[in-house]
Length: 183
Image 1 (spheres, rainbow, N blue to C red):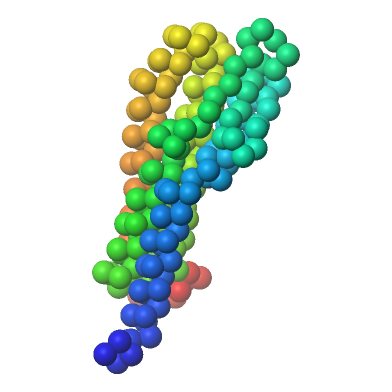
Image 2 (cartoon, rainbow, N blue to C red):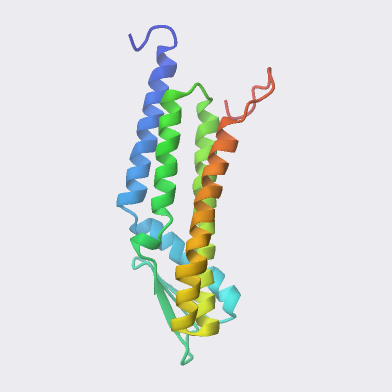
């Protein structure tokens, strides 16, 4: 009895959850465009951090910096280094919450978008940090310390921050009578 008391609401929740599952699959499995976004953002930020010219190679998830110098370097944003594998599971958590909890859908969708954005911004910062460290300390030392050591810590912090944003924003209780804009 899907359309019994509250059935339309249940159907809306199921459709929303299915859309979030589809979006999570798209982000995790078809992540070339997602990685392009990260490479483009990292190219922009790296230009500011290093003070050098950068180039983003659209469709290839690559950016280079220190153009026109002997220190020119580039990074390829691989699937393993993408925020897609953190943002996707956050969207899956939101999908489960849509069906299993009686929280407002607008709030869950807003929290999901905000959490995914936080994860992507942190990862763009991480990739730019790696590029800056390579620029400053060379490819061997700079890459190892910034990617393996600091990058792992930043990735973990970004995942935790994203999950916290999802939970804090999506599960907060409002005072009685506050309809809010995210109905």
